[in-house]
Length: 358
Length: 151
Image (cartoon, rainbow over all chains, first blue to last red; front, side):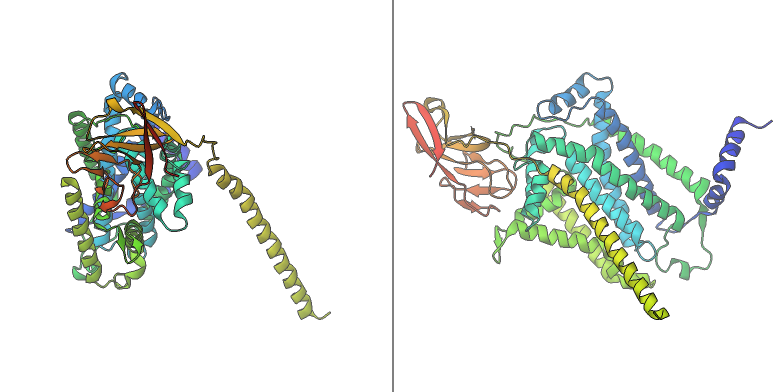
């Protein structure tokens, strides 16, 4: 007598040929070496994204995206709704952990040069998802309509506005007008819950299909040096390890959300001074701090424009690394790329600490 | 008509078709994109151009203090200096749009976002601001403080 599961499997298999997929899954192996630990961070990032989707949808049930109601609706969620404090705190904490995991994942791919041929598209979709993740952070930051978020959004959108030629229309597009108002809140809400998730889903789909299809990248020189490659089947060995780590991440998240509930702050007042000690989210701190050091004018160029152009150029070069790092494509070690990466990590960490303690 | 010229005519016809189809595709994209882009441009709202405002009673403003007042839709900072002068400037930092405040300790106008500094004539004297703050005229009628545009 067949179980109901076997019957169900057979029913689907007859129609969509599951056997091929199962066979493909069975053939996927994960290489084991001293850098294998980094393979887990993509999965952790994915898990945190899924948590954001679920907790975000739950918040949508009570959140009101308007200047007069946004702050109060989150107050309501946190004080009246059962477990509202937990859901909101989880959404805020997971957002930060998501960025952290994505950044670790990105740097590990960079330093192991896993972006090299044939994985350029995986790298590009990953970088765009990281930028989109920052966009999620920036747009979501305004939604509680508190003082910090209000000024952070003013500064962030004004930075976009300082870009030569295209800046001004982009700023108006982002703000829904000349100033940061309720119209900006509506737009950020739209970006945060509709536009960004839509684009993200497409990129994530491509990213995951490519990872499955191409398999895991191995560090350069790994396959040449030692004859026999140690591997682990992806299904079920690696996947089970992934799931165990996800469980640990979920626990860490729950501990953080319960013991350090996310603050709501003071409601935004467009006619109040920016409060002392105002800071952006930690992942924007290094750029924020750099802008403080650039003088008002450098060689007749306005300091902030210079800063924006330099950061824009740096991000563009970083994103395009698979195309200028020729050496790695041929399986040769490229020390320059490593040194550039180390410099970037040192720069980002140093300025983040400076910004944090300032 | 030889075979090759027939082929040529065929090819020209195909080119023409390609142009027509390509052109209509571009036109179709434009006709979809234009309304969307136009829709995203927020319509200009009629704002009453404010020329002057009442900023409160002089007797209620402490010596050596600053406050933000509404000037239409824009914030303006009103400062009563420790030498009992009244000054008003646009409160929007010329750097990145934050709202400035009066710093008692340093006796300057200060922006908390990126440490921009202006003296009490609105001149940018430190930090990243590229331009001075626009000054407003302050008038006192009886006990009422009036702020108006400096034109």
